[in-house]
Image (cartoon, one colour):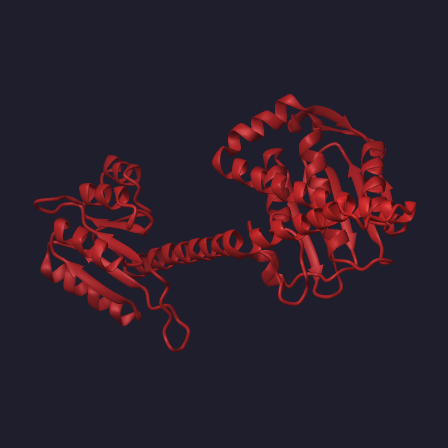
Length: 374
């Protein structure tokens, strides 16, 4: 995969391949793009364009449709079938203006379809939009590579080291039989096993959500529908916080009205939000959990006095995205808020985050009414 190029002043220096059989149009397009700071490649035939795409791996392709030898539709087909070029953004720029032409272009996998005569600002706007999406894809790819090569092995080894170490101690010749030692060792093994289980469960759920989200949504929506009451929330939060010796830090303000939706999905959302609140706040600080219900909405809100998030952090929440990892020792893979957003969305819900850096965070999850939620 081609690395993203940056100029000395930090602006993007993307390389754009223009495939156009009319020499004057090709030269004009390249002049316009180079004046905007882009590097360009030019190909006068579809076949040459494919060769250039495979050789130079440009950041974006602008292509005509009506060309001899190989038209734009076939160029795009070959581009998409080659793993080296399949993800390159592709914009048709053509005189074919019929609605069925546009539909055919998009069906072939084009990212945009512009017609001649074109407006320069429209072309530049489309290019910037597609390059921004590509940059975001690169960031997601880098996050995934980091997770698979560094974060995931570390997160797996840490609890396993504890489990293996204490297990060896228990079966070793120097094992101490004092009850308090047995309890302490057992708690450490259990805590590490839970951490490992949570890590694996979240990773597998992430894969399911990415690969077959509609199937997971239907499964959760129809096979596990319960009336979730305040008592369910209270028992879960008290058990979770007590295990971490922070029961006195939890404040509950729960509406006694219930919500009918997937018990599994709701409790997963609650678990991830509570985990984050406990992880990013200090023992002794308060975590407030509130629920409210009106005819249109059911609201779940968790507020803490923890590390908080910068505005740019909130805007860029994604899978495998962790913030200030070099400052704070963080457990997990950065999947909690991503999973929360995905699951809430399946029920017509939304997630809203308000946070002040180093002050605290409030996360509000709004669900649809009972009739809309199932």
